[in-house]
Each structure stands twice: as structure tokens, then as C-alpha cells.
Image 1: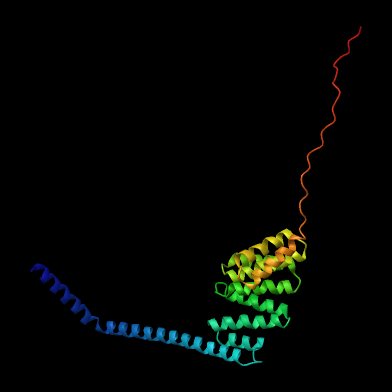
Image 2: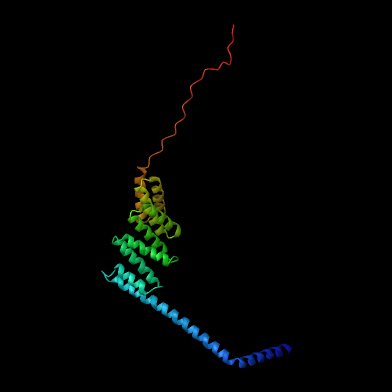
Length: 235
């Protein structure tokens, strides 16, 4: 009975407090409702932007002749913060690379990396930077960039592309053992892919270029020495 009385007492106290603070409670409820409405609006707006950006990107890719770097960059600028904008920026950089504008393509790939370091497409952009450096004959910088790609991703296709490119650079520089190591990795990890098959063929060709170590020769026997006489006896 005492517990029931205590509960009733607290309910009455709560009711009295609510009556006294009715205005503030109503204002707080309205504020929460407005906040929920604003959040819902921004979520809807973001989702709608994603939809519009995706449609714009799709429309561009299905129209022959419209896939220019400038068109892709326009989509990226019009729909910032969307996944479609990220893809558009990468595809625009790819268009520049395909047209031989390697320095401009490198700048765009690097722009993507600077703006989206945690993106799921970051490894692709890094691979693009390395490929542009290689295309500009900056082989030492390209090797370093390919090494970063290999270490930053677990995507087997991107890793294979970076390792295959590294192998080609080493082969062109006459570093056949290093090249063979990368070709072997690509061939072993991608046995059923065209790149894996190509790596296997390159590896066989390299075996004829790598000199076979000469067998170790046993050291020549030292000539016999006459015994040393510490002193000579006299008669």
C-alpha cells in the first residue's frame, strides 16, 4: 500500500511539474519535430542528388561521342559529395590519359586522392597517378607510386596491374631478377586471367635472359712445402 501511495505521489509531482512547464515542453517538442523534419529533408535532398548525379552519368555514357573529359568534370562539379561525382572525376581523368594528356590526367587523379583519400576508388586513382608517371618516362617515380598502390589495397585486380607494371619497368631497365619476381606473383595469384597468362609468358622469356650462376670452384691445392730445418748440424 505504501509503495502504491509513493508511486501516486511521484506521478502527481510529475504532473504538477508538467503543468508548470507546459509552455517549455511544447516548445521543446516543436523544436525536436522541426529538427527531425530538417534532418529528413537533408537526407532526402542528398538521396535525390545521388539519383540525379547517377542519371546524368548514365546519360553521358550511353550517348556515343559525348564522353569527353570536360563533360565528366562538369558532372563532378555539379554534384559534389556524391559517388557519381567521384566516378565522373576518375573517368574524366581516364579520358585525358587515353588522349595522351598524361600530365593533366595525373593532376586530376591526384586531385581525386587529395579530396577523397578514404574513398573506395582511392586505389584506382593512385594507380592512375603511377600510370601517368610511367607514361611520362618518370620510371623511378612511377615505381615508387606503384609500390604505394600495392601496399594500400587488397583488391587483387589493382594489385596485379601495379605488380605487372613494376615488372615491365624492371625488365626495361635490365633488372631481370626483380622483374621475374613480380611476374611470378601476378601469374601465381591470377592464373586464369589474361594478365596472369601474359605474366607467365614474360616469366618464361626472362628465364633465358637471367644468367645462370657459375658453379663454385674448389680452391686450388697449395704446393707442398719443404720441411723447415731449424738449425743445421755440423760435423
